[in-house]
Image (cartoon, rainbow, N blue to C red; front, side, top):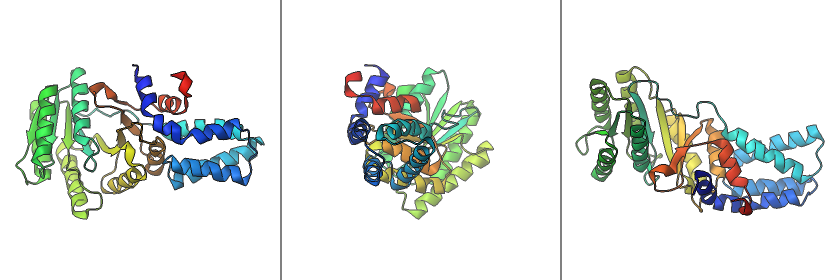
Length: 306
């Protein structure tokens, strides 16, 4: 199956949650208060978030007044274009110009963070880049063990610290080793820290300071991995992590039949941070760069257009 076909299948739940929008369009309803209220309810149910839903509605209502629209199908056509514009941002590709390019990967437990790192490592290796994986999660030996497996599988260098050691010291050692060995890309796996734990977020800030001091610049990328099935919780995670360390991109994993695609729009709009990668399956090939046009096409394609 093609990537678009896989993406379209993965977004089946999202299309179902947005099916009412197509009904609103085909009904060619008048643009009365009942219509706007119903559209808002659909957007919130699809995990766009209250703030983003209100922003979209304000834009649609302004366009309707400006263009003298009177029917729901006119508004829904504009809505689909607006979704793409919300998701289209500059700097949407990974920045790897520095050498080594240090990628700091953050997120809570269970989002697929370590697996994402492994898939990235394998992809970079196929591009003939040298890669080092740094296990800065020193609290769970199993996390470092999992990362070691990915390093061996992808042919990447690997560095870990003692269990319970200072994660920032592991980051320091990793960058020093990468510089000495001429490594192209350093992928740093951090603990699946709960975003509500202040001390752990302070630790994340410290790791960032070490990266800046030792590499002479902030991380080339600070990527937050979120689980697409967690809905609005993913947006709250993104906001709190962004406060601790400025995010440069979002990786959305587990976009399957239970996920609602509106969460991508909500995150991108709330933080003004691009979605850079999406994962729709377990295979290496199922983690891909995010493309707004393809995502919107897959989100709104009717079932007969597979």
